Length: 431
Image 1: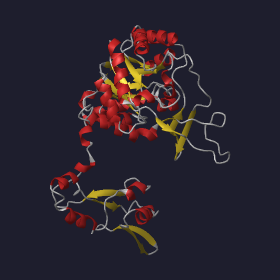
Image 2 (image 1 turned 45 degrees about the horizontal axis):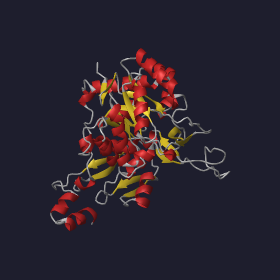
Image 3 (image 1 turned 180 degrees about the vertical axis):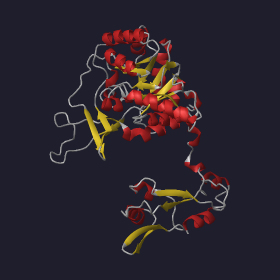
Image 4 (image 1 turned 45 degrees about the vertical axis):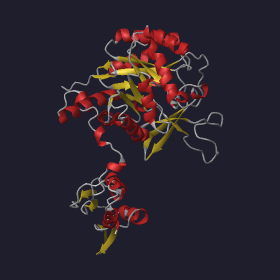
C-alpha cells in the first residue's frame, strides 16, 4: 500500500488533501465531517478581529464552458463573519477529536504588531497545527489594508511574517496573491520573514460578465458589482506556473509549498506535487461536488503511485520541477511535424481551416472520388501543434519528432557566440 501521509513545512497529515480556507471549512461541524470522509487537513476559513464583516447577496458567480458547469468560479465573500470565540472553540474541539489531522488557522488582521501577536496567542491555545497568513484576498478586505494589499508589497509580507514568527511556536505558511507581477518576489519576502512555507495561489481579480439584455453586470448586487476572486478548473495552468516558479527559483528552492488553484481530481493534485507541492488545497471542486470527492482523490493517488512504483509522496514531489526552464534554454533544433491518421479522420476540415487561416498554411485538402482528405505538407510544417489541438478526434493528429542531425542549440547559445550561425538556422527553419 502506498503511504499518502505528508509533511508540509512541519504540518503533518494522513494524506495531502486539505480543504482550502473557504466556506467548506467555515465551522467545526463541517471540518469534522470532512475528516470522517477522509480529508487529511483543513485550513479554517480566515479568522480576524474586525467586527464589521458583513457579506452581500449575491456573492458567487460562475462561467460554464462547453457544458462544464463552474469551469470558472468567482466570489466576493469576505473572511468569516462568525465570532472569533466560536471559531477558536471549534478548532479546539476538532483537534481533540482528530489529533492526527492537520488543522491550520488562516489569519488576517491589520498590519500592526500587537494585532498579530494577540490573534496568534489566542489561536495557539486551540492546539492548531499551523498558521496560514492570508495575504491574498483580492476584494473587500484589501480595501481595509489587508489581504492582497499586503501580499502585493514584499516589504509588508516580510514585516508581518516577522510579527507572527515572534510569537508562533508552530509552522507558518504565507498565502500568496496571484495579482502581482512576479510571485517570486513575494515568496522571497515570506522566506526572509521566516515563513516555514508558502501556499498559492489565492484567487485572481475578475468580473464574470455583462448581461446583454439588461446591460448590467452578471451576478450583481443591486445592479452593481465589485471585482471578485476567480478560481476553479480554469485557473489551474496559472497556479501550476506560479508553483513551479517558486520551486525552481534559486532563492526559494526547497521552500515547502501547499498548492492551490483549480484542483478537481487526483491527477490535478499529482501535477501540483510533481512541480513541488507537498500538500494541496481544494475549494471549488468541493463546493461543486461535496466532501466525498476525497474518496476518489485518495484512491486515484494511491493507484497512480502503485503503478509508478512510488512508496511515499517524497519519492515524486518536485520530480518535474527541473524540467521547467527559461525559454532561452530550449532547443531550437527540436523539430516535430503533424501526422494525420486518415482512418480516424472524420473530414471536418478544422485542421485545414485553423492552419490555413491562422497558422502556417501547412495543410492542404486532397479531393478524390468525392472524398476530402487533409494532407500535411511536411517540409512547411513548423510543429506548432494547432491542428492537433483543434481536432475533435482523440489521437487522430499527433506530432512526430523529426531527427534534424543537428546538435541541440538554444537562444542562450546564440548570444554566447555573438549570434553566430543565426542566419543559417533561421533560413533552415523558415526558408
